[in-house]
Image (cartoon, rainbow, N blue to C red; front, side, top):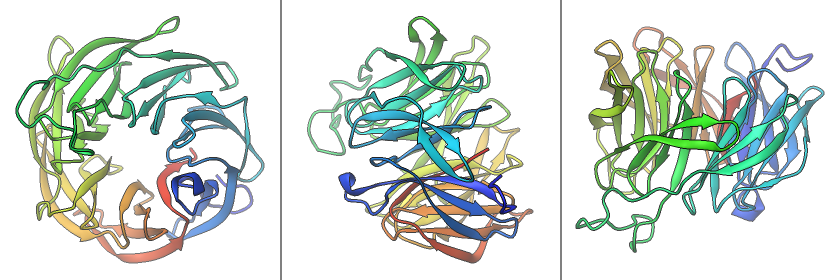
Length: 355
């Protein structure tokens, strides 16, 4: 909780000047129980901390430096300020995501520019102590007709984008350049060792992912604007169970899917679609193994890069219109209602509860 305010604290990832953004670093927002958001200030000046993550038990935050190609730990200091905890560590080109082990042993970062997936070991204070680069990905669709890089139109390149700590202790990562999902095991002395891979359809572009309590993993695909459902088999290996549209109304030219989150009761999934600027609601069915699109609502701004659910509210970070938009969620239907508030924030790229 944010001291002396009675509000929950949300960390905000941003783009700063080195990425043509208007942010100044890691931002801090106070979130009242009535959904009202208040800008508290810049918690730490940092170069394009486009994604942040929070240690599970310590007052420590991890942020990537997307243009600087770094990752760094920060320690909470006071009401909402953050101070560096150790130096910046090298990452990879366009490092865009960081996730923390639920036991606080390590973090994993994903790099869009060069496909690197990197594990960093943590000490008992949450500081970064070691770096292990995972094995590079191989394109499962190499040589197929139409296998070109969607971002450039040239030869396909690996573009790691996110990681997820699975409920069984393994780690799942996405590679939207190779339409590939990889599952890893963790070893303290060597980092990540590949367990198995799941190839998604050519041109889908797996981006962000979330795990349902059923153990199913839902993956939003940036390029095909779908949600893929992966289910574990008896041998523990995940397989593609199905895929369907990420919106009720379908995609339009210029769309790019962004974030995917579960409702607090796990009955609904919310996807964000940039371009047509929508938040889309999907109902979870089949004991957590299927999704059905229910409704699309305007996101309330331009380029909904990321969103979060908390306290019956949906908060959406709009990178290009420089605002966070708040909606009340209908507890029965899961559908967002009218816009409840708008908060000006320079180039917001991620919204992460402080704990």
